Image 1 (cartoon, one colour):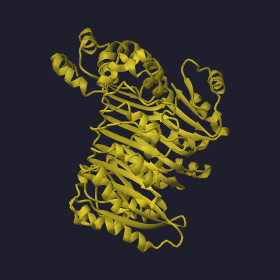
Image 2 (image 1 turned 90 degrees about the horizontal axis):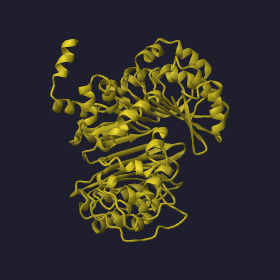
Image 3 (image 1 turned 180 degrees about the vertical axis):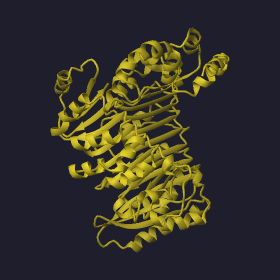
Length: 557
């Protein structure tokens, strides 16, 4: 051991700099700040860029890290990931603080109040140093919109080239935001919706560098899309779009005209459209619409499409989607049998796929395709999906032990099968459960099983999100299942709210790894009640509480 330490100590400063660039900044600080004078000087006096991620730091550890390392190194930070509202409180509210991050090129903001973004943009003139360097910005904020009152920009511009917004954004808000980023190259919007309050004010907006766009449209008709959005896409090369409801999106002739007029440089066209067939609608008419995407206009560009009909909850659906093997890292399995046949007839590089989504009515026992490098798996519609052992069948599609994120988007009534899947996916770090229901008897039986104990001892789940209502008993079940859990995001009833907070405070020894608890309540949350509960447990100095909006509470320790 001493020999290895001496060997590392003898490395030149330049090599040490190179090594530090590949390590998490907090881990470097922990290992080397107090080691000796030479390494502290390397850490503090060098110019190597710092990638700052504060998501996995406890409250007790953060103060020294902030004062000793972050503040003196602000001018060297090239990448910043903020998901903790307390840490955001130190950095985002004051524009004079943000200016100090003069080398910041990537900014990722998640779970932060909208007011911080509004403050940043309102002080844009004072942030010119920052915005000259910033190239990539990812936003996932607490709130329905982005910033309703944000004015259109009239003179101060940002150098941002990559903008990803995971929130719901109206067209009015989007146009205002785009006015700040004239050099934008890549734009991705998770939920773009129509604004019924006001129509945006038309003004000259030239996005000559915008070449890649990814949009998920909600409540936006094709007429509105064409008249209000397409005017910004004259230089587009890649368009990925997800739509629903308006059958005009299946009008091939209209798309041909739009692409020829607005997007002559388009080389990748990737569309997914879901439409609910009305009573009496002839499925053949839908077939006729999709057949019009087989003319020479489409085939010469090597743009190919398929459609699939399905019956879900007493309604008939048609899904129209692109099939051409673009270089993409996401693939959705729908009608598995047909897709397997298609993939066997085409050259699709499955090695590129990192995220596999098994959609509703996909029978995975019919699947004969394998995604060797997938690290993320989404499963929808289990009632239609599995014949036999789900974990064995999924193992024929992806390498379960290689997965780092799993999203389960169906109602879990028997958690035993999910436990078997997670036992095979023991390297999973992030788990998202949309519908979770385990009663007292099921929980008791499951917790005494060998598979539960095995999973509890070996799983690596650090981040857990439960989208459905979670009871105190289910909360206890989950934290016992995932003892290495660091971040938990749950929805609770008003009755269970106080009980879950008390459990979090009283059981530190059993859940010592759990740093943050994000609770969304069905009723208003009063910060006074939360603080009083913490005070009753005599943990005011150890645990911080913050109420976000009216229905969210964030605890950090």
